Amino acid sequence: MKDHHSKEVLSSLPHRGEGGGEASHKSGFVNIVGNPNVGKSTLMNLLVGERISIATFKAQTTRHRILGIVNTPEMQICFSDTPGVLKPNYKLQEQMLQFSESALQDADILLYVTDLVETPDKNEDFLKKVQKMKAPILVLINKIDSLAPDMASPTASLSKRRDGVPAAGEGSCQQKLAALVEKWQTILPQAEIYPISALHKFGVDQVLKRIKELLPESPAYFEKDALTDKPARFFVTEIIREKILLYYDKEIPYSVEVVVERFKEDDNLIRIEAVIYVERDSQKGIIIGHQGVALKRVSTEARRDLERFFGKKIFLQCFVKVDKDWRSSERAMKAFGYDLE
Image 1 (tube, rainbow, N blue to C red):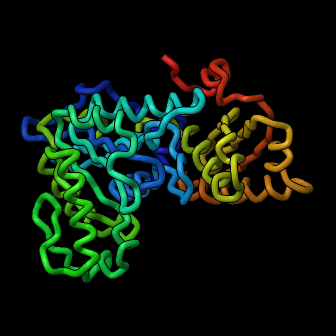
Image 2 (cartoon, one colour):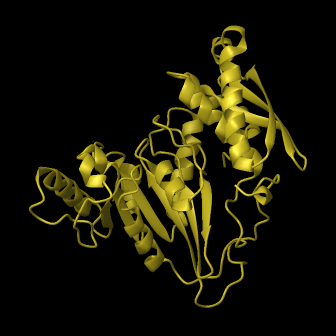
Image 3 (spheres, rainbow, N blue to C red):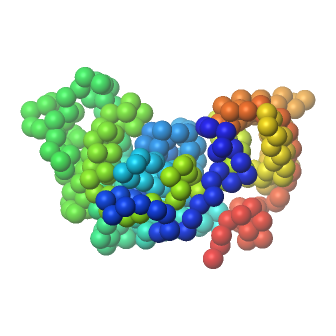
């Protein structure tokens, strides 16, 4: 990421609709929704061309609605990644569901991401809201490489019409995929359906081409050099949290919140102090590890990624504190910056 994005706020952004642009300029919000662990964040990073969202093999990785902006002279595409849709068990998950539902309200184009294993009728309440949308909907059946690895190879010839239905006679894998496409056409008859593999970058160019065709004419919503609407501190917390997701098991990663208490940027160095909050004393001990080895690993790996992200040397200090049952506490949620309205 370029240096000018490493300021406390990555860009000074105008309100929606205030950007400049000629009548022929296109701009719009392309919102990505779907169930947990279907590859939304991997797709988001691929479409934006930057590592905006945490992408791991674990479900419920994304907690916020994250904007990634792609600019060309002729258009501005505002991609929005959202938390996976689930039935909430505590206040944090209630907030995550609100982020996902809000993406249905302001979408100019909706990308509904699914995969080969989830049932199309999962989370019916959310799907009923999608069915009522007037905006164009693209259903993306991700991870087709798991059906047959050669289907997502650069030389694969997955022939399909615009609605994504594979051509007849291409084998049992194609037949299975065609059956899944048919199910989605029944559930969302207004949608266009595209089999893709975000991991292998298969089919995504066709989706992007269609997005550009569907994008409405509009002035730019944000400055043309903007990459996101999030401040630099947000990406610090996300990168640290990503390492915790990767290196810890069971409930530990989901019990963690990260807060940046100090972010001081000089010409060649950024000094950061971050606090990792957990819900139990036992979790604090696990995060720190024997003689602090586990916490040191998280800090070292996060620092390396932060240096790549900001293009500067990083001095990072991480501390661990307990805020009991913070995920179910309205007070703690508000303190951590979640909007509970």
